[in-house]
Length: 352
Ligand code: B12
Ligand code: SF4
Ligand code: SF4
Image (cartoon, rainbow, N blue to C red; front, side):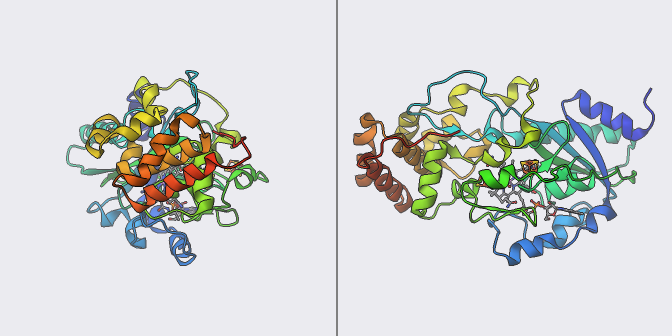
C-alpha cells in the first residue's frame, strides 16, 4: 500500500522510468555552503557553470514560492554491448549515447509535474536538467540521492554515478529525505586514474581547466599534453575515465533502448565524420547531447584520435586538413596527428 503522498510520487516516477527520486526542502538547498565560491576562486571554472551562487542554491529565484525540489536520476549504459573494431573509429562518452538525455529527463519530469498537478490542482512546477540555474549535484545530494564522490560526481549506492540528474521545482511543501553518508572511504582509484591530475581529492572538486571532458569542448588551441591525452583516450567528446574505475560503477543493468542509440553514433567512423560539412554533421550527429558545441571541436578531437592510431591510410586525409579551410585549433591538431606518424615508437595505446 502507498504510505504517503511522497511514496505515491516516487511510485509514479518509477513507473515512467525515473530510477531514483528524492525530496529536498527549499531551505536545505538554500543553506548550501560556499563551495562554488571556493571553486571559482581556485580558478577551476569551465565557464559553463551558473555564475550566481545564490541562483545555484535557492530555487525560489527560479520558481516563485518554490518550497520543494524533487531530484531525479536516470541510470545510463556504460559498457559496450556490440564488439566493434576500434580502427578508424572514436567514441562519444557514455553520457552522450542514445537520445539526448536533456529531452529524455525533461519529458519524464514534465509528466511528473503533471502528476503533481493532479494531486494539487493549483500547484506550479518547473523542470531543470543540466542547463538550469540549480546545481544538479547539489540538489541531488540534498534530496538524498547519493553522496559527492572524490571525482565530484554524485554517486548513488545502487545505480553508481553514470546517472543523469534533473529536478522538478514545486510550490508545495513536502518533507526532506535523509542525506546519504559518504561511500568513498579510503578509495582513491579515480584520483590515480585521471590522466591529467584534474581531481582535487581533498575538496571533491574537479579543476575543469585540467579536465579532459572540458578540453574536448574547448575551442582554443590545445597543448601538446592535452592533445596526446585526447588522442590516446580515443574519445571525441567527454571523458569517462574517473567513473569507469569507480567500484560503484562495475554493475550492469537493463537500460531502455532509447538510452543506447545506434552503435554508429556511439563509435563514429572518423573518416566519414571528417568528410562532413558542418551542416551535414548536424544532420547525422546533431541530435546527440555530446554535439552541443558543434562540429569543429568534434572534428578536431577526431583528428587527434586518428593521429594516435597512426593508420597509414589516413595520412593523406590528415595532410589535407592543413591546407583546407578550418580553425587554427583543427590545423594544430592536424600537425600533431601527422607528427605521430613519424615517431619511431609504434605502440601508442588506444585506451577506453
Ligand atoms: C559545468 C559542468 C561541467 C564542466 C565542469 C565540471 C565540474 N568541475 O564540476 C565539465 C565540462 C568539465 C563537465 C564534465 C562532465 N560532466 Co558536467 N556539468 C556541468 C554543469 C552544467 C555545472 C556543474 C558545476 O556547476 N560545477 C561546479 C561545481 C563546483 O559544482 P557542482 O559540481 O554542481 O557541485 C556542487 C555540489 O557538489 C555541492 N555540494 C558538494 N558537497 C556538498 C555538501 C553539502 C552539505 C551541500 C549542501 C552541497 C554540496 O556543492 C557544489 C558546488 O555548488 C552540471 C549541470 C548542473 N546544472 O549542475 C553538469 C553535470 C555536473 N555534468 C555531468 C556529467 C555527466 C559530466 C561528465 C561525466 C560528462 C562526460 N562524460 O564527459 C563529465 C564529468 C567530469 C567530472 N569528473 O566532474 C552530470 C553529472 C552527473 C553526476 N552523477 O554527478 C551533470 C549533473 C549534468 C546532469 N544533469 O546530469 N561538466
Ligand atoms: S573526467 Fe577525465 S580528465 Fe576529468 S577528472 Fe575525470 S578522469 Fe580526469
Ligand atoms: S573511484 Fe573511489 S574515491 Fe573515486 S568516486 Fe569512486 S569510490 Fe569515490
